Image (cartoon, rainbow, N blue to C red; front, side, top):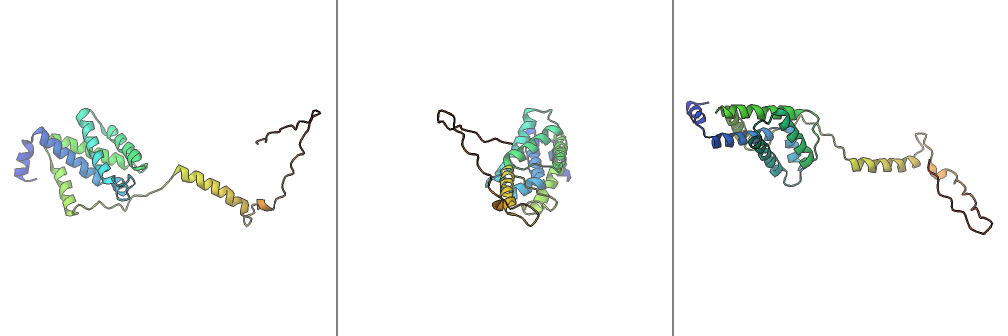
Length: 196
């Protein structure tokens, strides 16, 4: 950090510190591969990038309303936002690193140290605003409705298959229906189907 930057950081107003912290949160989220994949694929809909911006603001607001916010609180917000807004369940624990980075930024900015935020800003500008690489993210889709549909389709398919030793149910003899029971007054007894 240059001498001019150090003196301006040391005399920064609370509003300037808050603005730097907000910028740091935003850049940290932009560098989170899991969130970047969700935004690039628009898993949060066409306004996915706006949702990332909203998340940065929400995290900032949490610190403003509750100064005792800790790393676990940030992790919970990150996980909840990804699941609610993007339909993503993070299982690689990267939210822990992101939350720790945000906590470190908070501490540094509060001390008037903007070096990390400035470095994040510079990195962003060098990429010319392009998203961070996402090569290490493993995407595993699981859709409950689709799973149920596939179970139904599989059971239909199983009836037709006989190469694997499965019985082709279309060739099975039909189970004879029992003759209706008629009582002495001429009424037919209704028998419900038994379920096994």
